[in-house]
Image (cartoon, rainbow, N blue to C red):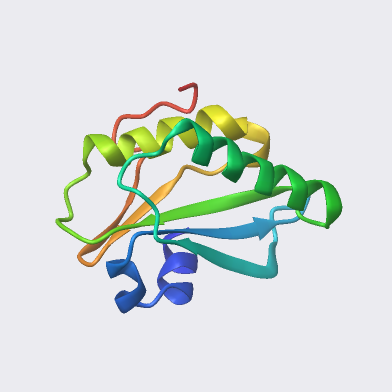
Length: 124
């Protein structure tokens, strides 16, 4: 995933608060549809969480996509924050392991992290 994100999301894009989505087919091959959702709040609220879930459910029910990989970008320091872990837990809870089979990744201007590797279990 690291190579995918580094090639798709330029460093200047990692300075903006956004959520990037790349879609995978049933064989986990990337599909030629990737996009960011920009201007996100620092914390994930219920309405936004549900809206993102609805988007992913719609795409995976009307296209060859079966799941997505997600990258949360934000400005600021490289250290993983409680808000970052809140995004990961909220999205994992909304999407479950079928729609989002890979851990949420975090990109800052300084680095890239797997949020689940930072202490959030897949069962969250």
